[in-house]
Image (cartoon, rainbow, N blue to C red; front, side, top):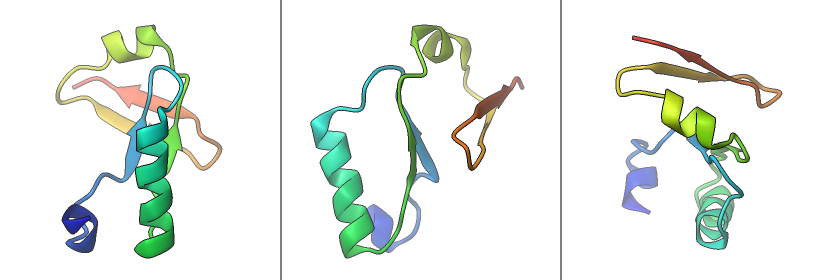
Length: 71
């Protein structure tokens, strides 16, 4: 909660598989209590998870398309 209050939380949360219930609840609380919506995309697949490296830039479009630019 403090992370969101200081506005240093993530801009988006990406999941290789289905979003889990704990993460979904946290995002719902953030949306309701802090009036801050965090972009969330799930089912990106294990290939996505294995291909993204530290330093890569990740962009998420309004339609949920995720683009990775390698460093």
